[in-house]
Image (cartoon, rainbow, N blue to C red):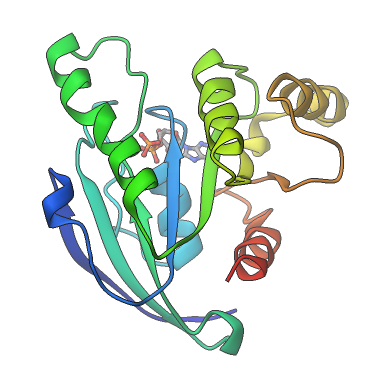
Length: 198
Ligand code: GDP
């Protein structure tokens, strides 16, 4: 699939600024530093679109991007970059301010078709378990992406990915996609999973 255009629409600090349009939305969530900005840029084939953070935990806003592709099954949609959660060093007051934004967006959006949860391939996190359980309880079956799989050695790959998938409470054969923004692995599978939810 080729991306024809990918444009930043706006950043939102509160729900009153969320989009109210009619395009389907695809949201991306994950812990700070999981590789979310890099994945969005690699998916959308635009280098600087989502800002790769020099300081983890920097993204506190909900960022909307409008995308058009050459694939009729996913011709126009909005990619939604949600704030990274769980940055331990962030001041509590700031965390309290931006983490509810994620919930407000996920609960409130009527156009939301797919939620992509990113989890780092070697890190099993309680926050990710909670995020996935919360989505499932709300009737939203997430697409879970294991990021940075280029860091796994061949010999540890199968075991590491099974450990993560099982730890996140996901059944075999579900939408659990090993991904690397470095090698491009997983890009086609992720697009296919997103398309299925349109
Ligand atoms: P975010 O905070 O979730 O948006 O994470 P970033 O996209 O800013 O990435 C955090 C760090 O992980 C950066 O140093 C990236 O270069 C690195 N990174 C992101 N994706 C990958 C990947 O697929 N493979 C490797 N090896 N590193 C990655």
